[in-house]
Length: 272
Image 1 (cartoon, helix red, strand yellow):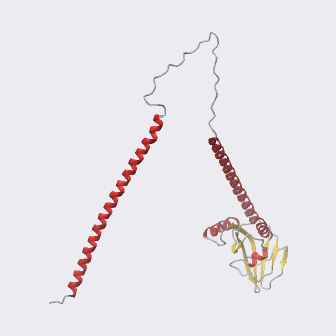
Image 2 (cartoon, helix red, strand yellow):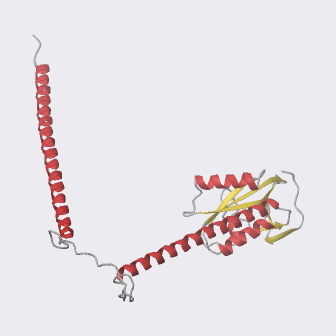
Image 3 (cartoon, one colour):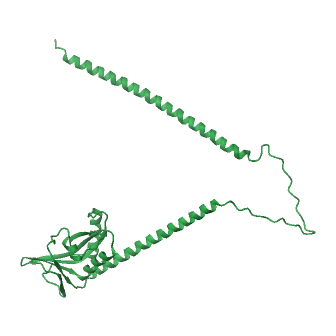
């Protein structure tokens, strides 16, 4: 990096003797928006560069990216996300460090003091400078669009859930009511009009009405009993087979033990 200080610099807080941290205005704005709006923990990674001159270390934070987290630990998936964002929006910059925002109201200086991979604990201020930072602007637009898409998906999901619940409630409500019987008015034939003959009565069924419906559950119960009996017989056969196998294995084990004892006794016998 070229040893050149930016213009339009303003000191926020107090200066440090051997460490000078410069933050671009878009990065500060991005951090302030996270502090105001985000209530869940987020990991923030800073991108930039630096150099050392006259025993003074200069740090330039030109970009930042954020990703939600659950336990405040930088995992492999988080590293992949930040590497992708770095290559896409902050090419040529290095990862300066990362910080886990707990969702509480934290200041920019407090974030810098707790930055991992850098020892900024003793700094009491930073330098704010203004530059044409289109990369950071593009990343903030990308993040905003992504949040809008996710919020739209969540809205559609909740809307579909409400519609399903309403439909289910209406089905239950209809099932709870008694079926509505339609009343048909008896037609009075007009004089001279052709009237159809009434349908002839058929012979009565050999069994009373409803006997078939009553016989069906009884046949199902018989079939269920037969299936249960078959399952019980199969279980008994498996149990008997297992016991027989166990007896065979037991006898084999006793035979092997007996042979081993005989071999040990033969080894103890004196040679002739």
